[in-house]
Length: 115
Image (tube, rainbow, N blue to C red; front, side, top):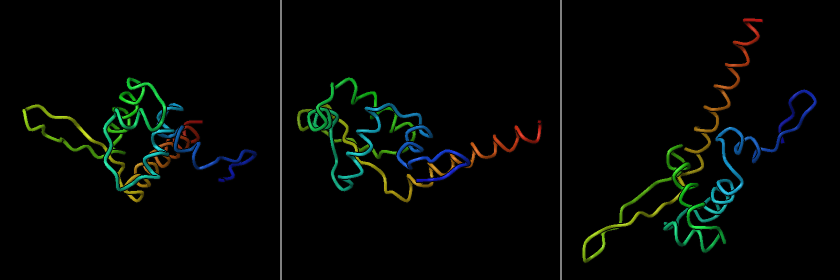
C-alpha cells in the first residue's frame, strides 16, 4: 500500500491504472507473473484463464506493445509459424511502471507550476 494524502493505493491498482490495463489484462499479467519461465500460446492462456481467445489476444497485444511481454516465433515443420509469449523479468517491468509514475509526477509538477 502507498499512502498519498487521504488515499491509499495498492501497488496492483497502480500497475493497472498506470499501464491502462483492463481486468482481463491484469488477470493475464498476474498469471504470467506466477509462471515466469514458461512460454505460452494465446490458446493455452485462454484455456488456463478461462477467458475468450479474442480477449486474451487483445490483452497479449496490449502487454506486448507496452513491452511487458517477450514474444518468440515458433516455426512449424510443414511451413507456417505461431507466436509464444512470456512475461519479462520483474526488474524490467518495474522500470516501465516507475517511468509511468515519474511521468505522472512531472505532469502534476507542471500543473502546479502553471497554477
